[in-house]
Length: 294
Image (cartoon, rainbow, N blue to C red; front, side, top):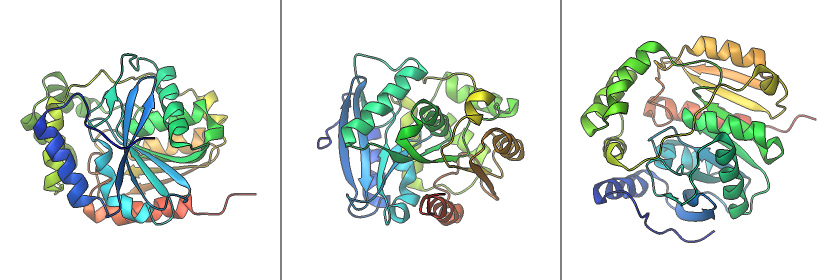
């Protein structure tokens, strides 16, 4: 692990907005770090005691690691938080010559990140696409995942609602700040998002990004064999999918899963929606700090 450096991609406005969120919203003592992998250099924002149990946080698509600012201080009281910028996504990670093209590549990349951090096993948490990534990794290397937290994960237990995809299409086909802003306003029901983070999210619309790795939902057989303790926290007002349906499917397929629906919050308002942030942190810590089952 080395000290952080600037990525080779991303314009000045994006980088300035990124640094503004870190400076203004992340707790004192946050430190940047980089880990070299076969797929490029991975940037992380780290907080908490260096000798505390590790917790790896994966953001949703386009959100960057900075989106965990509302949880970093609380989680960092009992864990060494490592918030990751996904390679190929907006952020300060730098993609290498070897691209991440498959689920196998994605898992090998996370293996290399943990190796670079010197972490044998970790608690792992992901939001949205980061939740799908975290679940795929837990299925790949359950021995390296102590506990798994999925925050309104997509592509894991249910598909997207057609209306969500229809509203997202203009932003996906021709991304720009105005379309990003309009989509987030629609999905969150006009929730007040932090202005600094919203500027970063809009600036990310022009960030050079690779096509994200996607795939089918994990099979029922694979999920039923997963013995990693898992917490699934769902957004009650998510327009991405039906929270009740996701919860019911997860309980049926995952033998070691707990589920809870957080009312009054949408998919994209997580994990930084101020009225919900404390409850989200509380539920995560209650799960992460609970004694291991005998």
